[in-house]
Length: 184
Image (tube, rainbow, N blue to C red; front, side):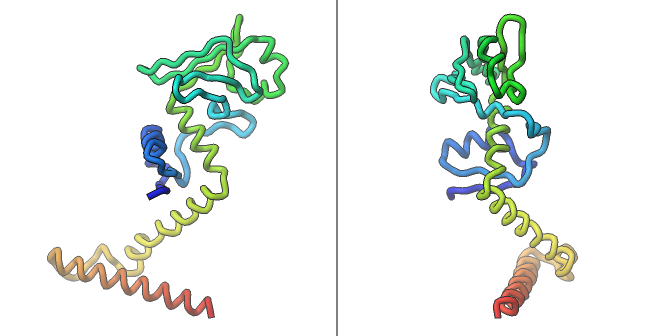
């Protein structure tokens, strides 16, 4: 398996991290929760050193004066020089907080993974996968509404299993016939 597509309700940062470790492309159809506004940048745009968990550079190319990662809380923090930020063309979109002495960036690993996933959601590949998954979700709905799969007139596990398999085969045959009519 090289690609996993799930509903947005099943998204967890831990799932995304685990999928990345086992080289599986993880996509969700739509994510719950608040997203980054269009006029703002996500924290995933900051360049990171994956081994040391340090923020190396901001999207404008400025290096932080100080960077740290606290593994117990999975929190990243970096401080940037005020002159660098004041002259930055991306300041109005940047998630850096302006402080008295230095500008500060603070975020969690969960936020970083969520922003990374939202960035991935804009790609054409992701949109195609999300559309595919939405089509598959209609199958159980049709089986329930049209083929009344929840109201079987028989009892017993084996008989129910056979009955359901026949209903699924009927659904598949109907779909093949519809496809054949469209293709000719």
